[in-house]
Length: 354
Ligand SMILES: Cc1cc2nc3c(=O)[nH]c(=O)nc-3n(C[C@H](O)[C@H](O)[C@H](O)COP(=O)(O)O)c2cc1C
Image 1 (cartoon, protein in one colour):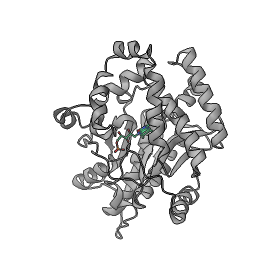
Image 2 (spheres, rainbow, N blue to C red; image 1 turned 60 degrees about the vertical axis):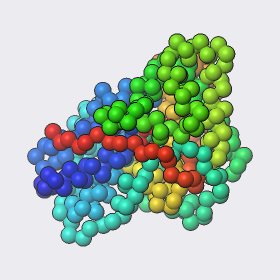
Image 3 (cartoon, rainbow, N blue to C red; image 1 turned 30 degrees about the vertical axis):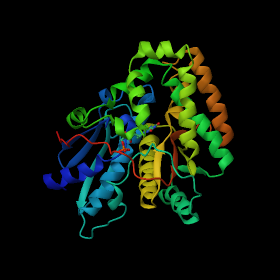
Image 4 (cartoon, protein in one colour; image 1 turned 180 degrees about the horizontal axis):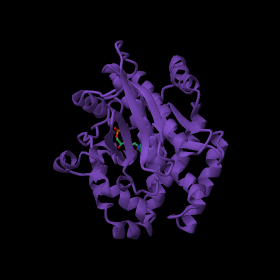
């Protein structure tokens, strides 16, 4: 059925509050008769992390979950979601049909605009048992997805080290470096004009670090500083922050088709929203898992031989810490814990329906 334009725009405004790699918001919206099409706009995420478009598929999955939650709350439930109706390699990720629902369901709706990425240090306190149970039942209720939580301090320390390897590669690999800095928004004007990318204030930098970070925009300077060990010292900082978490989680799907990544994104969004509802802060620490998947889904393309060795070593260590194999899709490695709110929230582009 047709959803009135104003309501559909409101549903999509909530939908687009979903997370995406570097806040690139890879989705476009189009109407086809009464159906809403979610289209992956490939030009938005050309990052090395977006291995075979999987990061975009995860983001679209989170968007679809938000649409389903917001639709229900605004009186138009999702009747049917068909993933990749034109085939797995076509740009249409989903065709969604709505039906008017008399009974409005609140579900996780109050948390759509509260969910965010928090990159500051957490308090490291153990998680409540009830919280752990709530998080673990999500994948069970869905009937898909595999969530592993690691809560003991020694393991958290080891995972923090593996996850922080990503920050080394961000400063040895020009493509990774350039993509990151192209997506940082430095001024209020830039933040409000683009409404995408990452506001510098969301990066969790301490005031003294902010200025130095600006200098790292220059690739020649980064290369020069690498002679003195820059890329080796940066992970020490992130590892310290990651260690302050109450738990790390790894969400996986049993298969690796585009549909698995979209459904994985839906499960991820429910986990993230539930963590938010439980008063927890959440940060994806998953750059390294995408680079690991790059090794075998794209033959390591874009990584130098020495970078491949670093990523291979990270994969070996990750396998010692989580039950993961190359047959599974890693949707996300993340950390959770209590902390204050982030210094800033990232914006979203205005919704436009073609
Ligand atoms: C697939 C995916 C991968 C991400 N990877 C990381 C990551 O490795 N580190 C990080 O700090 N944030 C990561 N993010 C979070 C995004 O940067 C964040 O969602 C985006 O900037 C929007 O901000 P928000 O989550 O606060 O709304 C990731 C998000 C997605 C969907």
